[in-house]
Amino acid sequence: MKQSFTFAALAALAFSVPLTADAARNGFRTEPINATDFEVIPRGDMRAEGYWCAAADYARRTLGLGWTDRIYVLRGYGPSVTTGRRTAVQFSIKQPQTVDVQPSSFVSFGFQPGNSESVQGANARCNYRPFFND
Image 1 (cartoon, rainbow, N blue to C red):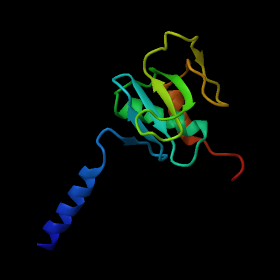
Image 2: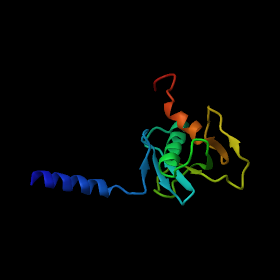
Image 3: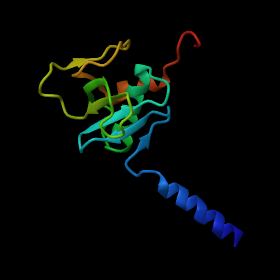
Image 4: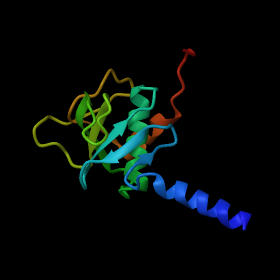
C-alpha cells in the first residue's frame, strides 16, 4: 500500500509540471510562442551562452532540428510573453523578414534581432566556462 501511495504522489507531482515548459541542462527555461518561435527565460544566470545553449537544446530535442539548421534571434532582452517574467530572449527557427541576418560571434554583448547560430554552434556554448569565478 505504501508503494502505491508513493507512486501516486510522484505521478501527481510529475503531471503538475506544465507540459509546454522545457528546461535545458543549464537550468534556463524554454517556452513555445508558436510552432516556430520560442522564448528562453533565465533562472538566475543571464550569460548569453546560457540562452544560446537552451535554444539549441530546445531546437534539437523538442523541434527536431538538425545540427546544421539555424536558430535566429527574434527579439533581444525583454519581458516574457509566455510567463510574464521580466527577462527573456525570443528565438525563431525561421529567418526574420524585417532585419538583416548576421551570424553571431563567439563573444556576445546582448542579442540583436537577426543574429543567428547553427544548432551545433549554439550547443557548443553549453560548454562555456568563465575565465574567472564570480
